[in-house]
Length: 249
Image (cartoon, rainbow, N blue to C red):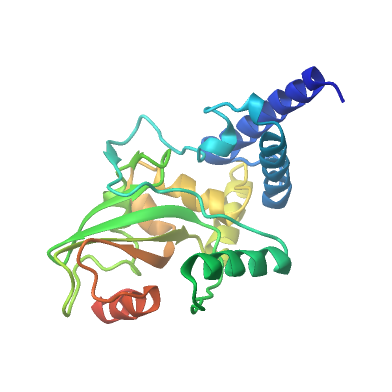
């Protein structure tokens, strides 16, 4: 294949992925499955690696999707909030472990958790109280949805125990399947478009301007990662166990 054809194929693939990103993050109406999207993104990553002369800093491989809106104040993340890497094969997991072990020159423990598909959120706690809740946004800054997050019963507003003066804890805001089905029945009865899936329903709910309606939709959360200058432990697992004693689910 001629280089000009390869370049055009890369450009076409970038535009296609950007359109799917917009449908997923902004419109909350995905047009393809997560698996199909990931396969397209992996194809683009592979082509860009094989043909570095066509590098583009604005490529979808160089940024995360954005859920920023004009309806909320935006907050800059102290720590960039990037997408997690994924894989669909056991071999790639093994290769990742071996690569890290070689870099560390030692074996290490791995924490395995269930993958929940929700809306990414970063919760900031100061002196034991929820100070801010920020969406991932574009990875650098996100929307301040604190008022809506305060309606989620599984997220503590005040902590108990011995906690750092300031830290962030990140995870997913989820919509339970029972609530999702209930909302879609209501929408069907009212002749309104249905939610595509619980993840998009959760994301759309976080962007509502009425916290009372957010509370009615009974969102849940799954928090799995802590950041801060004075965390209680050196390992991820011990930090998450400590968080549980402070009141986290």
